[in-house]
Image (cartoon, rainbow, N blue to C red; front, side):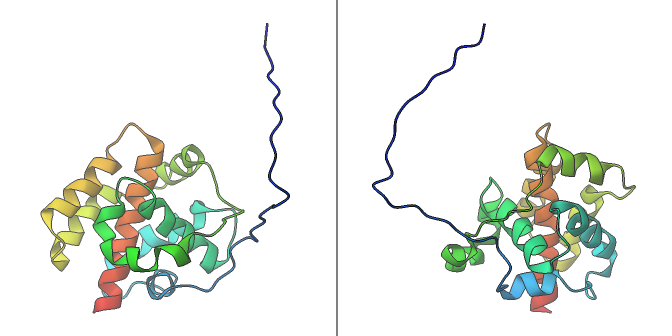
Length: 163
């Protein structure tokens, strides 16, 4: 037997509706939407992740969702420079996909995000940051694995941006 509960609540006549994100993009998102040149070994990782992260082909939506998955989770502190624009990043992603679905789709592609995380050390990314990303990638939790993949691509985009 299922029990259903009802309750009354009031919004004081104020409703908020936020439109779906369509831009503008911050500098690292613009970089993430472009092919990797400096960290070219991670280009396939970038295109694969952006293809599956949302149900949209709009780069502004794809990259923003990737940034938000890193920033709003346990991996947020590795990209401290994002916190200066945190208020601007909080947007509604209407085409957001379930982490389990994303993880399943990306796992079917024969590429290793763990190897990509190790590759980040070649670009002076600290071992502590790489270890934090690897812990997320090796997690039993699909949300953390997706955030770990996004962190790899986000860090690579910053490497591209700073080159």
